[in-house]
Length: 414
Picture (cartoon, rainbow, N blue to C red):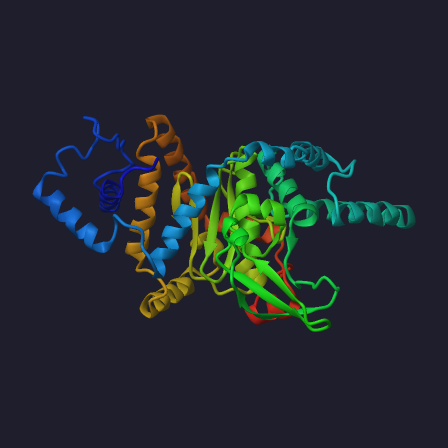
């Protein structure tokens, strides 16, 4: 249960002002709360009235703050699963794959991945037989590609996520487009449909209709939004990929969060004990630790990348853009157009949510999370280090989606 919004908003305000240097305990009704006496003071009552006018104590119904309210609800509900046993069975094979990846890092000796990667290994073995010494270089290049995005000292959690991302993309979940008709014919988008009772039970407030050019039949594509429905359908686009993969990361025992991008994309992050920062992972592309993939690889002109998890929210945009000054100008344009936030307002909203998530935690856990925040801030501030990681990883245009769709979105990297 999160802390109250008014108290959390006040603490966020004090953190921004430098009055507090960390999130204090917000034990409701106890003598240890730092807000004791404040709510009854003139300053406290004035601040609370202003906060209520701004809508802090109620969920925003539309617009930009409706986006944040939806993300907060989404990340919180997905993290509190009721079907952990079912998910655990689905993921049971992944630790073995992670261990095999760690062994392969020391020297490629066995096939650990399925789909395209095992074919790469087989082709590499055939090529080695034919071309002799030239093969050693090819095998080394293949190993680098296998771990691209991760530094040589990556740990077990990183190997687990890499194995999970590749399995998820190549074996478990399927990209929706092109949506095929039952007759095998190509379809074209024909507009929205009305969600059925079953669709709504799966969280689908929207349904797409796609009409077949060959037989004229219509195929429905409900945009499911619950874990159970997504595990049943196992098909979607970036939103469905990111939502379910975020849940799978949590089920694997990792600390994870869900990242929303204002330019219509979503992915996840996990905390790496070995790398000591939050690490980008995109299950649509099976890419790990390539935060500049969208900027340099796809050519996306991003404005906002906001991360939400059970321990709070953070504006992570700076880690995902090449030119922060240009990004700030895009954000200012969006704010003027009513599609963005003022910088201080956004920081306060995200910090308020973080205080809500952490205010009732034990002191030890709050300190651990604060230590993670500080390590993350050091990593983001180390532009040279992040540049080295980006250069080592290799970046490319988008893979998921049809060529026409990627061209229309400007995500081919051309």
